[in-house]
Image (cartoon, rainbow, N blue to C red; front, side):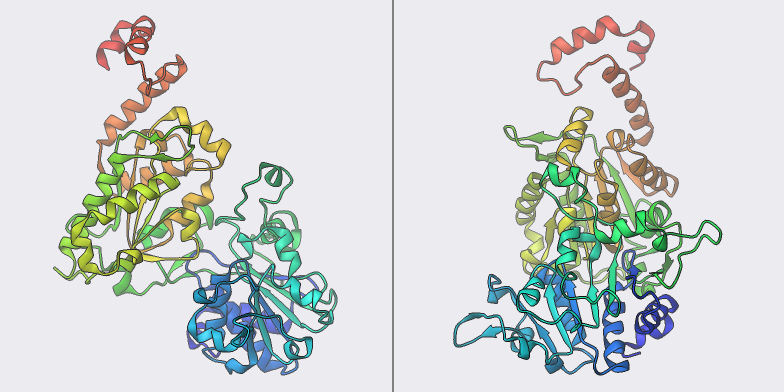
Length: 499
């Protein structure tokens, strides 16, 4: 192995062997990579080994985004002669966003001060060409022969719409001799679609997920309960998170097969933090009964109460950093996730008002964003604001495909970004209505990681909210007197007195 880390990982090692041997040909080989299991470094190692095993091999490496393509390219250059690798950018790419170490090995023309499409014979000299999925289409219009590439690797295949993947395959991959390798995780966020029509016509399903859902080659055998290893390798060792952070996603989405292999010092560093509800359990669910608000007719919400709780935790983290065995923090160690754009904006504004934060470094490094913006990333500390506090808006979330309750993949991605400490702030009454969140909150209660609004009260309030909803009474009404009057008429005296 070029990357010695892979020698001790049986699944990564096996994936590389199968890809080099072409065990799935002419079918694609899928590398199913749950969070933090190292699917990108597995692909990079496979590309190195393919080019070593056959010096005549030619590889096209693609990803849906430029950032993912740049990462592939940088990792390939660690163990390989950079002059054998070519990063091809679209002419629209802003050169200032390109990593400096890649500008020497790409289609940037200094004299013309722009990215130019090279001649066919120039491109055909390289062992590996790295592009985004869409830019790969230029290789077809540039008339590279169909059998030129012996292997096509698609990283983050679960995030791309299927036609995007086809751009990088059609007209470039020989259907008999070529080898296609797809890496991704169908349990994390798929393609991001704005069009309802696109969703209705199945474009919300990536090529990777479609194969795993509907093609028997990529499904577990009913007899053995295992994947056919010629076609699928599932990576099982998680190198990112503390076991407590990983537990619920592992049970819900990965059949409890993920194993904790994160560095022990790194994963345990916040286990003795004085603000944990329970020492040794670096997961906090902070119950808040806030109010979700929105401006005008925007479907995007914010929740001021949750922001206040988040800023309180942020202040506590700053005050305790570097003390009692805790590491010194920098702003890039912390990430804050919220499902609504408006909440992201309000948190970004609030962060600037925490004066002590400036001691940690550049505030731009403290990333506040949606779940989609955090996919593929990790942070030492992750805080999550769930926002939703009114049952009346849940339908809107579903219609606009926003919020945490509309999509369990969003839940999975948000909760698997953290390495050492996970803090979730939310309304337990509303979140408990969703089976996925109910499991997580119950887990926090059982492990004594729950704090904030008393959970027993939340369960009682859940009953009240359900009764009110069944009577069509709006608990967030702008006319509370009218609603109260309706309530008085419908409640039996004993229940009314008690609550």
